[in-house]
Image (tube, rainbow, N blue to C red; front, top):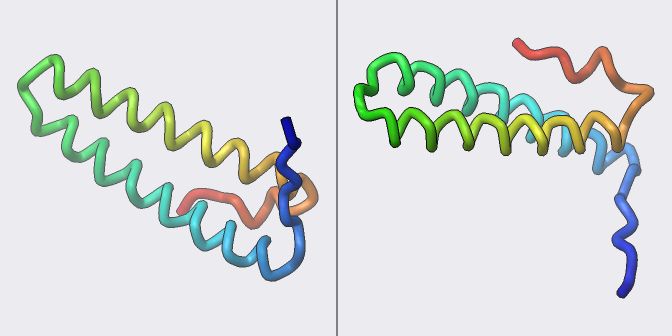
Length: 74
């Protein structure tokens, strides 16, 4: 099985930073949705989505460890 090689070029870094920030906004929106939700199953699902998004954010941070300051949540 071939191992996937991550693109860590400057262009890729810029795109990933933009994507990372959009993920942060999505998490904030989901958190607002959780506050207004009453159904426990839906709340559980939304929390699982946040966990999955955080894993993706961590993957991006690990791709560009020298750029930690650029990955601050707004």
